[in-house]
Length: 149
Image (cartoon, rainbow, N blue to C red; front, side, top):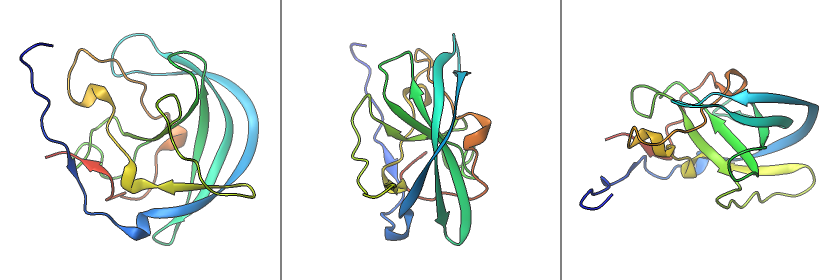
């Protein structure tokens, strides 16, 4: 949009403890429609999960493969910062449609929450973004990555 400036992005200070290795485990493949903030949902299927500890709390997130949009591995999440310090609809950690370094070896993946970011719809109502399904709501506050002003 001509003449519209994007506001400066805000981030939590880098936190080395927000970078962790997660064990990848397969889950039964299941198709679903991931809800958006507005508009039609995105077709996807769950194909795995990542298990990890965050500040002493055991956590698990489902990995999705996007059947629509641009395809690829998708890892959205919600945590206890949403609606206060971060976008209410959650943030994204992995979106291989846009590029991501999954790192790790031997059934592990690196989850670096310092690089979590808000979906486009956090900035303008013209965007329709997939939001984190219930399986990806974490019981902890992830004070890393992008935050609101």
